[in-house]
Amino acid sequence: MDKVANNEKISEAVKLINNRSYKEALECLKDVVSENKNDPKIFNLYGIVQLQLNKMNEAINSFERTILLDKKFIQGYNNLGNVYVKSGKLRKAVEMYNKVLSLKPDYPAGFNNLASAQSDLGELEDSIKNYENALKHDPNYVSAKNNIIQVLTFYSPKNTSENVFTKSNSELQQIEIPYKESNEISDGEVIFFYKKCKEIVDRNLKDFDFHLSQIWRSNTINLGCNRHFEIFNKFKVIPEYCFGCFKVQIELKSIIDLIKLYFIFDKLNLSKNNSRKCMIELRENATGTYKGLIYCSGIDEANLIYEQLLRILHEKIKREIKVGVKRGCTEFGIEHPEYKIIDKDSKDFMIYNNDWKEKENIIDSNTIKYARENSVNRKPTISGVTLNDILIMKNWIYYAKKIGDVDYKKLDENIFASSHIENQTSKKLKYVKKGTSYNLS
Image 1 (cartoon, rainbow, N blue to C red):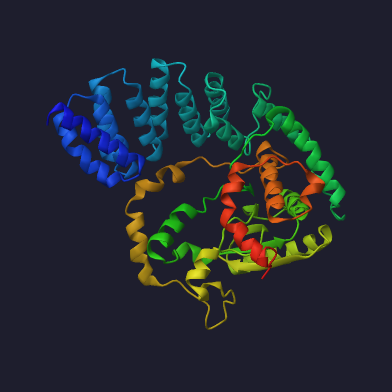
Image 2: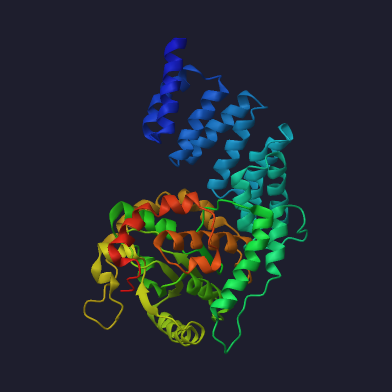
């Protein structure tokens, strides 16, 4: 292959990669690799494509080839670290990222990647320090900002004055959530609480465009939802695990009531500390706008939590609320309507189809795909207000404005326009305008 043809092939491969046509890119690069056995950049490109196709061993071989050909090839070490992370080999990943930083001590991506691997390992003090290092070298590094905010949802660092994120989070943790055992939560308490928190965030992070919209209080159980949805999306079958998944679902009509539910979920005492979340509904095919979900392992547990929660909600929130038990995820019930039946004594109560196991095995045969997810040292989220929570509440309030919930004005009449919420709600807003925005059915 001459030089012109070689460059054309590389250009074609890069275009295919940018279009996420990875299989085609892999085919395009095979001849290039065989003709350029001493070019680390070619092997690096080849490894990137193999990584995207979850060909982990092949990707490792390609990136190892890059650093064998050039012992100072930073991208090779960095990408090899990325493969190790995805493979769940976190110690090896840390080794590679440290090698990157020994070659380029001012490389923000190296610090960010090292910090993420350390976070997965549970080395949280080191993780925060290295996210800070990434931001020192690039103050606008969005991934490092978002990552440090996430670590602060389950860890309080020893030194809280290093950067605006740890400082803001520490200040917010001092604010008490207004919750008394036998009292209704008033609108005034919500408004005062939010404005006090907003003042801290705006002072340190004004107009920060955050891309999350669900506030979790999680335990350490991995629900495996990414794996389950891959099975469902590929084969339209419901994974066996999801037949034991039930949720207590709360639907509300006001942004103020959603924040009240956030207070309740933060203080809720459950024997298994069940994972729970407050959220705005962004899915076009799901009814309602403001929701809370508590994840339960079985219908009996869900019914017990439902009874406990019903008493609390009626005491704390006086406006109209809908509370019920549902099974699994909305998408499953749309594809298989009988899945929505929750009466286990009903003749129509859906049980797992054993023929579907073959479909699950196809996904699980590529066990490496969720290796990182399964290797993370999980920590429960901390109680009390975090920076993550208030940034998400700002997104909730902008959503309230977009759907016409006038209660947003009581919280922040000049709410920052979130590009993320703007993009995510485009289809939902068409649905809302049909008059179904507050449909609690």
